[in-house]
Image (cartoon, rainbow, N blue to C red; front, side, top):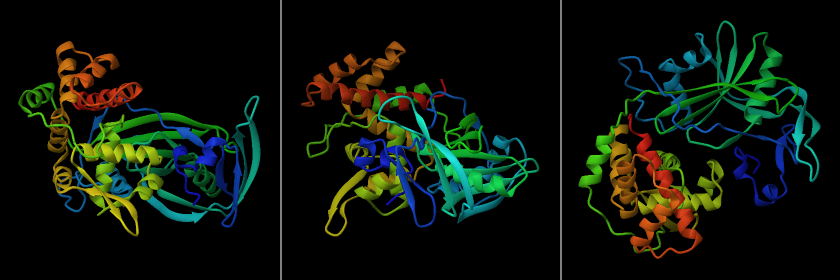
Length: 388
């Protein structure tokens, strides 16, 4: 009931009133207008370094990472964590533990005026560490997410930071880690004032890819020229309103690792609200990759279609090209990518609106412009796959 890892997960009444919740013991919580969340820097056209797993490993595959623990293990054995921390480290702790006792200040959102702060005390609250790595000169705590996210709850780094800072003489280095679309991303932080919850400062970030997924512009051009156009869905599946295709893939990966997920499970466990859950599941349905089923005792549930499972079983390069082909089989997306390749720049919203009107989608007014933003996001994903 209180696990709101992303600001969007909070209940409506919390978001309406700028409220957040923090545990201050195993039995109690504090609710206030706390500034609990930090934005994760966007990843757009940044350098991605290549890495390799040790030769001979069969029990861990970089093409089969559908949990945070498996992604972290892969990163560790590929030497990514050692590279990020700039020294040899070993895994020493993980799992649930108790915070101990400490005091801290946290920024608050007043109804008027400049931001203020509140002093709070924590006494043996529960915390969980995804991984703790120790080297000669430091100890690092890592919070991991196997999805693309927009923000995170600072508590996930701050509470473990305070616990282990009180136990060790070595400096404690907080790291936030995401695995999405075959990209391992590390965000190394520091708390400039250990007693200030909001003193989180980004030191550096690094991105890696283990499985080579090089795609050339000519691959996109070939698909564009060969693909057959499919008619738009005629049932209750709307034209996509899901701006980040990376998050569509994250959702497909989660469904591939499980038999099904309810609408509530997707909303609660991922960086979505109810409306975004509907947008992104409908995007998967639009491509024929996700099924929506009404189950009597569970409500609405989602699972991969047989075709979706077949796509997700492919190695990353082949899978991405198959997804590109699916997208370009729809007229609006094909025309948008054709414009991009012809003009060496993406079409603006007005151009895409024209493509949508010519396709006779039955969409009008401001909705056209909102859906056009999704088209821009999807073709950006396609073109960012290329090495050119």
